[in-house]
Image 1: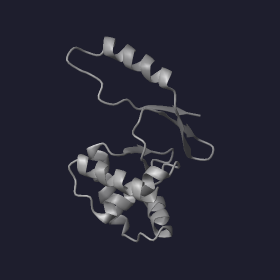
Image 2: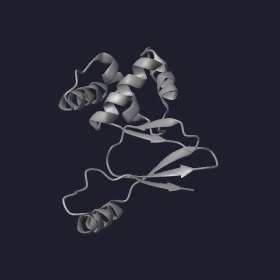
Image 3: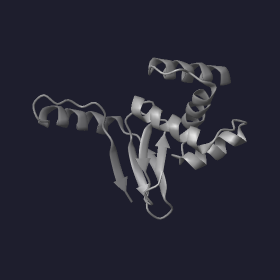
Image 4: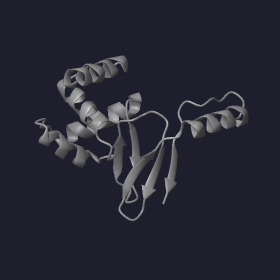
Length: 137
């Protein structure tokens, strides 16, 4: 399973037109396994627990590149801290103001409803590339 995940991450990075370095593979693998929407610092701590030591600057650079290439999502928490999500499939982010958690809510019916609505109501010449929906609780 571990090698399958590494292979998948390697392929995703290469498909995005990037060189699949060990650092990039490690960051994408660990981020895709976390459900907590970590900050760069939180991700660095998790990487270190798994034996992948790199500077926070390297991690920020990798995360920014991944975000630009659409491999991950970049969002801000309630404290305006940048957080990252390895799941780029459609889902709603629910922000919990009480404990600053960001939870994922999946609903394929909602995705269809929103796509259908916006496809018929966007200004001419525009189409949906990606949808982000956030709720604050």
